[in-house]
Every structure is written in structure tokens, then in C-alpha cells.
Image 1 (cartoon, helix red, strand yellow):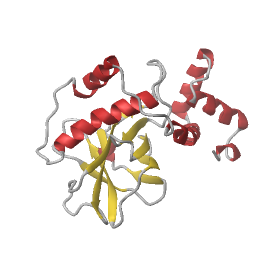
Image 2: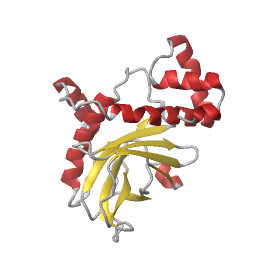
Image 3: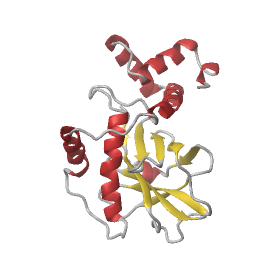
Image 4: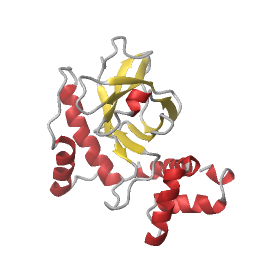
Length: 229
């Protein structure tokens, strides 16, 4: 956690308490208003979140209660969606359920307290947790920040990120994940407009990315995009 050298000490402490869900109700509302107006404060909250994510990676996997599984499935598949005839469609659908259940148990927060990550967030996870990526998106700047805490590309291969808008005919490539733990990409305006209800996916591709403009390799991890506030 390096934010303490760049921010007021009180703001650093407040952001840390917010990420941990420790702010009293009276302070919570005021802090969330500051988040909406201050990109510096949102970045500080992102830094705290990235600091705590590796701790969550040590939590053992637990089978979800049936009630939670049913709620997740209703949220993901309650409304009919157009399907595209891609060979990895079945893998994606199963992966979304598994990833949502894993992440829901790891990062469950009270329903009246939104996640504190920029304007949108996504936890991109493989079913076996061999690949874990925390994504934070800033709709104001178009910046998407990807913090990979588990997994890496195989030798001679690349990890490619895809945006799958709700009701779309197919996925949209957002770029390749770098070798470093953190990759920062920039969304085009039309991609930023499609975040609501969309899904992020990571596929295994030839070195340099898919040669076809669509996923050609295995879909390794998926995560639903949710508003942060």
C-alpha cells in the first residue's frame, strides 16, 4: 500500500475503513459522495482494495448455500439474452456461474453498501481459481485497471480480455494482459457505453492475440461488470 505518501493521512485511513466496511453509517454517506466527485479518492480506494485482495486469495473454497446460488443465477440469467453461435458459448455460461459464486462468497458485502472501486467493478475468476483478476473501470476516463493476483499466460501464449455487452452478437477485444500484475487499458467511448449488464472474459490466445477478432482459444475466466455505487 503506497497511497499514504500521496494522500492526506486522514483520507488514507477513511478509504481503508471504507474498503473493510468499518465506516459508521453517519460517515459512510459523506464518503460515498466524495467518491463520486473525486477521482483521487477513487484511486486511493482502488489501492486499498488491491492491497487486501491477496489476503482474500487465501480463503478456502466453500460450496455456496442453495439460496445464494439461486440468487446469482437469477441475476445473471433472469432476463432473456441474445446468444451468439460461438464454440465457447457453453464454457462461458458455466464459467460465469462458477466465477460469480466464488467471488460472491469471497467479497460479499451488505446489499446497501456498494463496492468501492471506481465507477464499475468486475472480479474475473476461473472456476478452479487458477486465474483471478480484479478489474476496476472508470467511466469518466475510460480507464480499466486489471490486477492479476493468480495465474499467468502459458509459454508462447497470450491472455486476451474481451467485453461481452448484454444482447450483443459477439465479444469485443479490449486488448492483451501484460506480464506485470497490473495492466491498464483504455476503453473506446462506444465500449464505455456498453458496460451496464456486460461481462468480461479472458481467453487463452496465440502470442500477440487472436488472429480472427474473436476468441480462438479456451475461455479461462469470466466476471460480470457491476456498478460501484
